[in-house]
Amino acid sequence: MIHSLSPKKRIQYRSLAKTSMIFLFFFCFFAGCVQSKNVHHQFFEEFSQSFSSKSSNSPFLSYNYIDLNPYVTNGLVWAPMVLPIEPWFNMRESDLLIGYWNGLNNPILPPEPGNCRILDDNNLEELPKGSLKLIHFTSDRINPEQDANELFFLLSPKDHKPFAIVKLNPYGFASCFISLLSYHISTGYGQYRKEMKVEDNIPNIKVPFPENVFIKIDPTPQNGIIEGDTLRIGRNISEHGISSIVENYNEGRFLIPSKIKDDLYEQGNFTTKSLGVDEYLKSSILIGKNPFEITLEPSSYKFAIFRKNKLICLKSATIKEFEIYELTCPQLIKDEYEFEDESKNYYLDSTFFPFTFIEGKEFQNWLFASSNYFLAAPSFENLDNFYKKEDDTNIKKQFSIVYQNQKSKEVKYLPFTYSAKAASEIKKGSLSELYLGVSGKINSTYITLLRNNLENNYYLGVPLGGAGEENVAKYSVPFSSYTKIINLVPSLNFLNLSNIQATNGALFYLFEPMTLPQNEGLLSSYVQQRFRLRISIPAWNSTNVVEMYINGKIHRRWILDRGDISKPFSKTFEENLSESNAFTVRWVAWGEDFLSNFLTGTNNTLPFAMTRDYCIDTVGDGICHVEANK
Image (spheres, rainbow, N blue to C red):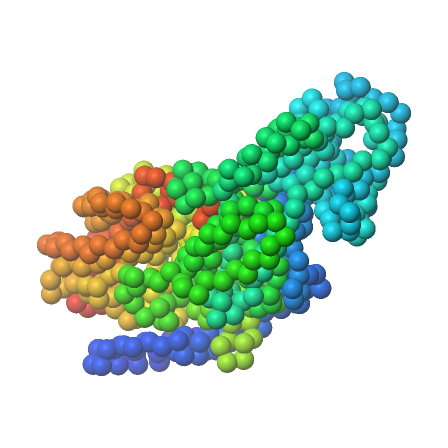
């Protein structure tokens, strides 16, 4: 559905549409229709308006507590994604902490440098206490300022829950009023976290922080990393790391650390461990135009670089104390099974990113570093619904399309409202309906719903894929699920008329029959009903089933012999039909094993891909007769 077209624009559009359709019909009938990106952008420019673009004063762009408040209720919360802006900004793991939620709509922000912030003292009432004292903390290094602005947690000795966050000032010092006679100090993150016991409420404490390594990222074509990429960081727990933990324990310096709920590092699932990653950083790091540095602990790391929806680099490195490691990917992972001219395709993640990002000039540069990407932004008419949970099925997801003019580099938007349904409303759909349902919240729950109910839907319409704003807030990787738009039709209804598929990895390539240029959802098959297509599955994607549906009923299923999923896979399918009436066809792919949570950012997500419902023209008049025959 499209709304918000002014009378003047409506007259212009009708005139344009009428002229364009007559021209397109005769041109495509006699000469074949070759659409170019210029045609698309000329069409967009006819209606587009300037979109807000603001530069950030912060050294890096990140979510804030307001962005995350609708999606979290308790515990530590970290930035789902960050975009370094300031040249050679040094980012620490502690910079990723957004706050601690003590219940719904009750966030507690990290303290100012040199101070502490009490999180929850309700569970401390039964513990031994003395008089309230001002306790002074300092880094145990010879030069404490090396740990400037570092965070550490104070834990209850009873249940090991954090009851306070302390942040060092630029000189490596901090103070906090504490009455507990005994508590634990926790530094570091994940399985390398250290825990030290403090007794007798001593007033001056030296806090041991882990040694540092420095990861340098300089985005240049020569380094194989460019603006618009996304970095994921994983690590495995080496024998050296385990032995040092045991050694520290035996020396009486540290306790064997307990696991903190909602830690910065997430445990890898089975597929992730097959990649050589035991745990990974929850936050995704978006790569802008400026170089930057990340401070981490010494370990064996795995770096994954995504170019939006494509994994282009996997690199391992063991980095020792104080080492400066320059991350480069000169040899990129190439798509061995790319069967189209990718410059003609467009991509869309239907996720609503926070306005902190959407209006951010740096984020817009990151997004449109690749020229064939769209952004789904909340409709300006429906900003009040921006923070609605996605499982609120009473409200349709309404959005506008944001793009970038390739000549002027000006970011613009189409001032029309597109409406998409939730997956739970698919049964009410039609061939022209837009709906959500691949990943996210939009999440794996919806994937199961679609898999179990595909045969109950005569037609599903046009699928839009996305990571989902709630899922991104809970660390899903942007563009890990997305919409691919093939041969975009220059029309206000381009989402309804274009050849679209939604996926979190696998892609379909349809060779026969051909789509019609004025409506890519129509397949011309009036001479013979032969279908030829190929599925392309990227490395580390566990898709192993392909299905073909006719009029919403499963027609055929192929089981794929994948073998080693660390390698890409491709297979061609052919099927002949002899339907007498107009009918619809769609293809679906799925898998039984979970995707790597290191590569997707989400647990228990299954691979899933679905094409739109194609209407088959068995008459040859270029008209879809399916709905009339239903």
